[in-house]
Length: 210
Length: 219
Image 1: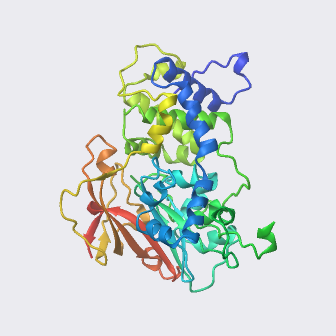
Image 2 (image 1 turned 135 degrees about the vertical axis):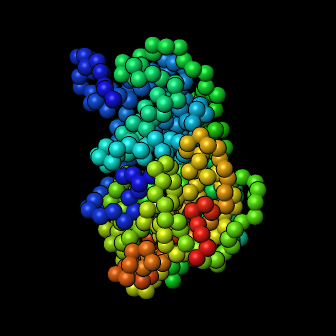
Image 3 (image 1 turned 45 degrees about the vertical axis):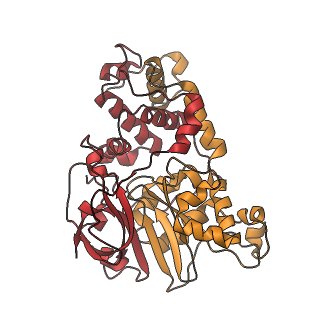
């Protein structure tokens, strides 16, 4: 397709892609299909309200409250709704639990499917060709790049999000955290640990406790 | 379709580039491309599956050399033109030349929170009995449709085992192309890594893939 953008002096500092997005937004606004204030609100929502802190609260409660953990494993959509985390890209949530025997890791080889309600928008690496191509074939190699080494013989289950099911990994609870409050536990839960490319922070390790 | 998007198992992309403290958006245009895509989705002019297909059917060289939100932008440009909301001429000139087409709704700022919280569940009533149950052995079909599909290439013509029955879900292969939702049973199917990739593969690897009944035969 041709792009006859008006490269006038006012816009000469903008890249082609910036001009193209701006042109499309202007056009769609002019035609009344989009409300620019709604666009601002959408951006604001994912910048400030929906992100991995949501998921960290869910995991911390699963660690601290056995009843909640059971509800989460039985029906994650319903369980996270207890926090008010519902809706887009979280309509069909499944929680998968890491154990001594099994490590879980999530990918979408076809695009970028990701549980927005609990993790927010995915990072660039999750959407990138290197991760999507290798996660299903060489997960141990991928994990090594994230600094994670799993014991030999531990089963690795890689969940390819090919449908609308969205997966949340419940990392293993670090030792020495008995009696911790949910708020304190949530600080140990990283985004990557909920994708399975990382582990929860371990307060007994100096590099994690910092 | 066998497009560039179907990345599972492809080689040569190099190491994963990690960015500590990564922001959600790396530029203002990414924010706008993201938001305008969501807002246009809310007009109800096409299905989520149709928008995925629009992105995936970019020519492979274009897909692979575009950043993530560039792919969204290019997909959206195709959708607004193919659905008659915008003419090619308008897109080229960046200004409205013909009257707008009516859309089902226009997302307003005050409705954003409610619309996002509601989402768009794709489970549907159980219209027919499920063909498979947990524990059944199945074989994925050998198929290479030129249209939309969510059966990745690396998982075709392979034997696996049903581990979960997710219920009846909208079938993307038809829903992407205006042929209706045609809801079908969706299963969580487990595959051994060695069955997918051969004997050199990590023996402790298990792949879990969500697959619709039309993709599966009894093993």
